[in-house]
Structures are given as C-alpha cells and as structure tokens.
Length: 101
Image (cartoon, rainbow, N blue to C red; front, side, top):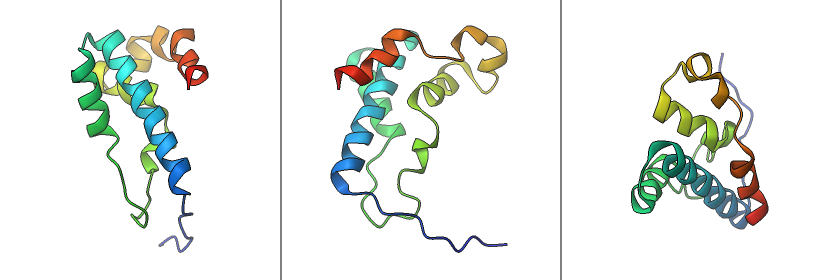
C-alpha cells in the first residue's frame, strides 16, 4: 500500500538552520568520541547531512533521529545501545550545543 500523503515543504531558512545544527552536533560527537580532527569531523558531518534542495522527495528525512544517534551508529555500530548503554543518552556538553546556537 502506497502512502499518498504529501511531505510538507520546509521554509528554506528553517531547513538551513536545522541542517547546520545537526552537522555541528554530529561533528562534535565525531571529534569527542571518534578522535577526529575538526576538518575530518566537519567533512563526515557534511557527507552524512548533505544539503537537499527544495522539492527533494522526503527532504530532511535524516532528521527523524538526532545527530547523536547517527554518530553513535557510525562510531560504535548497530548494537551500541546494548554494548554501550552509557552512550544511549547524550551528555550535557552535547545538549549545551543547542544553547550555543
């Protein structure tokens, strides 16, 4: 059965701001837990969160889980929640990134 509902359009400025925030958080995890340099972390964040132009089907679907989860999957694997229960929730420093805007 096919879903006929339309995927809502995001205002460009809102999408760009959200994209920037997710890239920032993903890169932070890669530097902090993956021992990457700033340049390496920024590169993998951009690759994981590529810009999708308006009209792209399901634009921003990657945002359905937060950057913490995607980065942990990349660094620790599919079973990270079982093997590293201490990493299920992000630390306060990660959460503070939202406040730094």
